[in-house]
Image 1 (cartoon, helix red, strand yellow):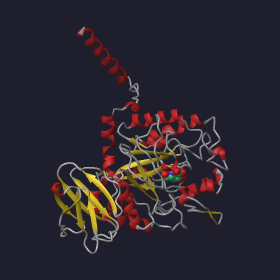
Image 2: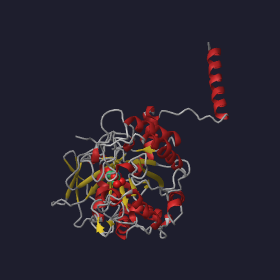
Image 3: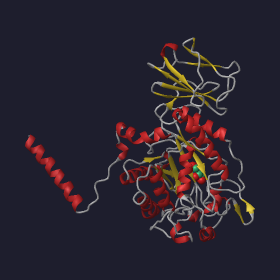
Image 4: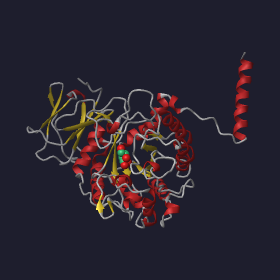
Length: 462
Ligand code: FHN
């Protein structure tokens, strides 16, 4: 019996060797059947990262929210649709795209200074324009613009050199491609129409460009799909694309916008068999963490993703830092957006905020990186995050009585420290099942003061 089985194994190996030697593709793997252990290993770097930078950059930075002398409402990268610009007129922006001030090393250095661990950049947004050297189309930075530099290649080198994970946002919806939504003009986003040619766009354009992105730019951390809401895109297409991408880079992470399971802007995935590794709340933060659910809130610093000269509605650094803490306290990731200008510069208001976040993270990053969701309901004065043996009490607003109640039994406490005030000490006063800490008159960090409680044993969650 063993002889026969061994013979079978040998034959299988020989067949595989033959296939590989004659250049036949290795059989595609169905990654939708991945084991929980394999998934956990693949997601680990992303779960520990907690903080990424979104970059929306493309031709829309040229009009920058204005068309034919008029301000165009809404988000800057939607100007082709919002201003109802015909394809041939939108194409006139390409010869104007020459961002000579673009410096990938500077962008990545800024992201690193901010404490960002991964960058997600728009390889192609809904307007179909590729900011990389695509042999699939002339509608790309190499053929259609005077810039003629492969932006993603320069970014991939800078990320590799500086230890930041590079990821790509790629729109399934395409307002420029004749076999996709170009023919839906003047409403390229018409959710009722279906282009019978769309499967040909998927086969001859979408997939080949993804193959370029996953072959020519090194290891890619995340494929961040978007534009999946049109009727043209189906769940079977999403599952097929998920496997197509994973077969090109098996360790890559793919968001839930590859399939049709996303529940609107709240972004999490509906019950059922939908592809995608994590939920994508947009411009919002879930009220509570969701045990066992991976999610990432993508948010802007002002009101637009793509650059818009008139949008100066900037969130404060305080709000951005507290968003990061709030999201981490619920077990999520924060994907914070910048929209560079047509010259290739990240707006100064974004730079200032990124540096402020970085200054806070430099002192307090241990309370965010590699943490998991708080086991406790959020207290009125701030948030909790946790790591094994460490509870981080992060104080936004000092309670009137100056006391914070921490649900860790006094006997368990090994050490209490405040990274922003290393000399600060606390008298540990038992209070009920936990301890009560008297805060100093002035909080060491006005935005968010981190108190690290190191303890023995397990936290008791009531
Ligand atoms: O339509 C896009 C929009 O332009 C932007 O890219 C956001 C960012 O996630 N996603 C879509 C809107 O949900």
